[in-house]
Length: 249
Image: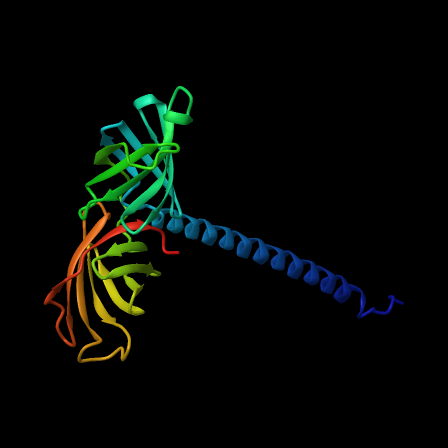
């Protein structure tokens, strides 16, 4: 007589196999999710790096020779060819303040402080410098922009004719902004070099005096913008210009 069929034998093996398939599937999904997270982080880092580009970053032809600036946050470092010089400083609005040093000693009369001011079009700067311990400015330094990276995102901090604006561009064309000193808000849409939208500010954040429309145009190198704004349904009437000075922080 044939052995009786055991209904628990093969189904148990199948159940074991199914559990193994499920575990493998969950591991694969976890790996995929982690990979997506890493990719997302890399994209975010890329955007953050792009947003860090300011009008100071790049190469300048100056009275101290060729000067090259890099920037992280609002901290700027630079090197210049005369005396193998070095600069470290920080950006506030259109001004860069910091210290300089050069060969051979990088101290004493070969070092000191400086204050540079960016022009409205970001194409040049003027400044003053002095040696360590000196109370009065000893000389002038000037420079003209030669080359640098291009950043066509609106992301970043801008020194403008109506206070400091911090723009965040979260998607391809949606841009939000906050500006001082009137706790202002901007909601706009970017289209290539143009930005069109609404502004509002305290105390009422509404018309006829505290809200309206704006239209900005980004420069081809992404370092400055020019534009106009108006009250209520007007987007023209008054000028609004800005220079990129740092990241959106």
